[in-house]
Image (cartoon, rainbow over all chains, first blue to last red; front, side, top):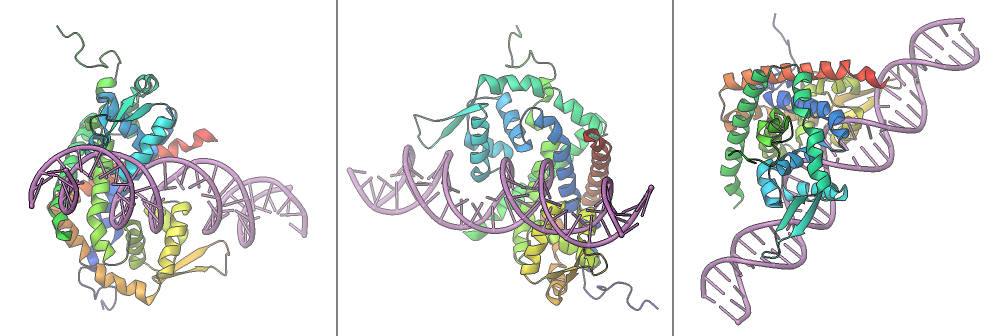
Length: 164
Length: 164
DNA sequence: TTAAATTAAATTGTGCACAAGGTAATCGTG
DNA sequence: CACGATTACCTTGTGCACAATTTAATTTAA
């Protein structure tokens, strides 16, 4: 008996190597599903999900540098530059180089961009109800995920020096 | 006093419309950070993160249809078809149309693809230690995220009929 | 006061993710 | 059998994500 139940019983560690045991896949698939939930709501505003995140930052505080968006959203210039240009093309913001330091680009909302905040004001509640979670559940999960993300970032930062 | 503390005090619901209150952003940024953690480990194997997920499924059970990968990974054909072709080009698997039903494509590991499992066997532990979480924390978070994802999927399914 | 180093942002190339539309094979009904 | 519907997959186009490289402006230091 117990001759060859699974094809890989001979590989040490392979028992942990299944899709359903991976926290990373739960995270990845939940994130994709959440983006799909936002999609129809945001398309009413003409925004994609990452564009919505940029607008959230700008609605809080306007006239900031691209590097500030980079730090708050943990995205790099290769992602942000074309994304911001698309928002500019849609007339929601303007990009302007700083006269003091020509390397810096400031992003400022237009009236159209600012007024979009009202149309977006109902989105958090709509998402919360559609996600089928209590506000307390969502808050708890948010706290855990931020803690995980921050630990991952500090690990990534500390292992950045290896290529130096 | 309290004249205009914030620029948007006049918009109802706008107080919930900030980046740091969004569970979705915690989820999104944690997922991206997790993918960055995997990147150097997987590049040793010549895999991207989504390719790794496909391989996880195939290491468990081989010779399955593309639609099975679609259901297990919650990805659609437009994502999977080119991804699987890249894995085929790297010699890790072969795609073969079913003789019984020419619409179906079966995916089967090559020897090279199967042997890669040994090289991957240490990844779960390396990720767990790098994420700075106990196994119990990771397990708990995984359970919560799967539950969230499943609720989101059932909500998305039930609202699919609206376009009919 | 240049030359080297650093910084801020843009560009290029690869690989997802997914909507929309297309094609060929199969199934279901009459 | 015919033929409309369905299924399984593929293709195309848009928009991220990010590594690697580049450009231009600024800072620093010799």
